[in-house]
Length: 418
Image (cartoon, rainbow, N blue to C red; front, side, top):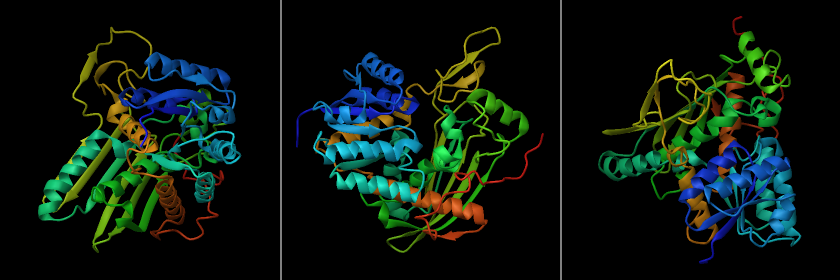
């Protein structure tokens, strides 16, 4: 066990990296010391943001290798775009294998990769480099999810039987950056982007605290995807105006809605169900996360927009649009919910604190990249189910070579209105 503080470098400088930096205010034994981005200005801006938050003396690096070579950097958080995951991990691991630097660990944002083949390659490279690894799934660490899960299992399940139904959803009006909207770059649409959260959350809720996720095994997967809003001509034009002509949903849409039902078999022989729903076509105050867990004599519910704080602004209040009340905020007037500390509420603070402690040898990782690979298996099986229009036995066949039709720009949903 080491008493030294963990020096952390970020690969990626965007929205997700900055959410982690906000969460770092609750991390007591680690510091954000570096940022690398292919855009040097963005790296410098993110490093300045970390310094302003007083979460570490962060500085920008010219390359991933330079960041790994710095003795001050002990671990790397992977928060870059999906389509850069392999090349980023290759450079990082190559630097470690060739002895250019030493790292205690690497933690990857969701999803681990765009498909099973890429996820397996990420895992192979990291294991070859001999690195401890973690999978960053913030919603599993959300305090409401974790507190509710622990209470349900301690009080309800212990006396009346294990839970049998879990639900999770993540919904908002759409991503910030253009690459998220492009199937080949992101790996799909909202199923790839956000079902990675919800599929793991339902499995986590159905798993007894302290036991491995392997005790709740997926057996059958039923999924549906649709383009409900953004392929409509008026909204497709709006997307192109916001993100550039490369985002053309009249020709190459990605799904903006996905639903999933997973039938699990527990180690003690029960059949339990996970239901999940994700959307980029949600109309509401902003990002809404929700979860439920039900058993024979109990239930729990969580909705992130039930935050306990609301503001009202009349039509006379004028100002710029922003996201100062809630992520993906959709309104500036009326009665609006406020999530006072989003990095805490969504689980970023707790997951960052956990993985810092793991890489210092103080805790055992609750989620590793092996779990991230399991999630990609579930997502790809879900895409197979949606494309074939039927329930699929898990894991789906041929997943090592499978790429969703959305990622190949070969998905043709029914035409949506005018």
